[in-house]
Image (cartoon, rainbow, N blue to C red):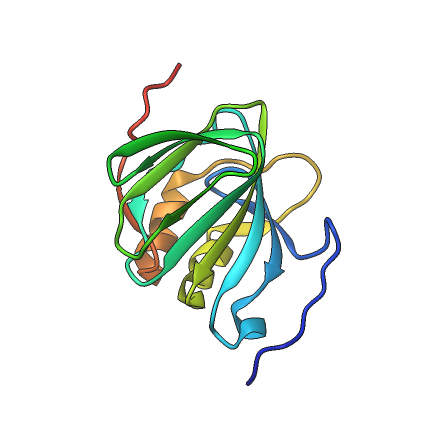
Length: 158
């Protein structure tokens, strides 16, 4: 297989409810990039928090399209707003929480090995929000090996 040319308009792409919270709109699947990467837009609401985790075999780069998040990247804390970004090389621990009413992020992972985790820990988005199910997220993370869930997020709840 070889990489395919792709054009997606705003809002186009597979829409999936991620069991960790939020809607993923897939812009590029791994098979379309010949395994090089995958990319999705992540739309979340205030209070969405990831666990403390890392991706052992993938580098992850996040660009903030809208809103603000608090980030802990390998022990360094920062507030990142629209136009900001972070990059977590493979194996580097990180977590974030949405602090604005809404946030939209563009997530990019290379190589594209971890797509099975995000796809398996989500379902087709329907009307309204789905149910957050961190047990399902942990189970799929363990099954795929694409994400190591290391513990609770390093943020105090307000």
